[in-house]
Amino acid sequence: MPKIVAIIAARMGSERLPGKHMHDIGGKPMIEHLIDRVRQSQKIDGIVVAIPEGAENDVLAQLCKEKNISCHRGPEDDVVARMIGALEQEKADIGVQVYGDGPLIDPAVIDELIGIYRQDDSYDLIGNDMKASYPSGCYAEVFAVQTLKEAAERTQDPAVREHGTLCMRQHPEIYKIMNIEAQGNLHRPDIHLDVDTEEDARVIEAIVDNFAPRNNFSLHEMLAFLDENPDIMKLNKNVFRRWKQYQRK
Image (cartoon, rainbow, N blue to C red; front, top):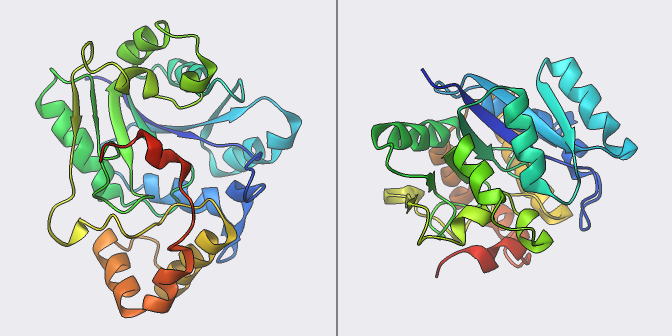
């Protein structure tokens, strides 16, 4: 059986919310919430956190050690190289990119994407982030590690290599790619559960506090809570999202 490893790229050098991965939310660092959520996936064989080599990121390496999570250190700006190094370290056949700024991703979403990928191995990349349908912060991608390595060799453009699988997504003529769209009441592109700013962190903290001490609440539950509390939902409504430029309309 192929080994499936979830990879989380994280760093302390965020511009809008410096050190955001160690930002305290409900008594523990943001990235710890994410690790605890990803660990609930039923279809992964491991987790690796890919962090830059700089000393400011030592705190992330220490947290991984304390949480008994594999950690790999690589270039800060060449994110695809860092990802590949981490997945090779873990001897992964299939990688699952889980974005470090989405601390409350639903593990059921991860498992759904893995299930679809395993059902049809003709696809090189399956994700739910290429077109806005799911709430941001609940995005993931599944791909063969060997295919990512081949795609990375096709470009040396730093602007592409700093965005992980973008080297694949930019070449649909080469790679077979599928975007999974949210169905039913999960189709909520108006909701933002990723953390780029202090406003985002306040939304996440409100959700965590509401469900504490549980950490297995679903995306359905989170959306219901936000709909019942529109003032919280509005806190980060106007935050600029740089990654939107890479999504299809």
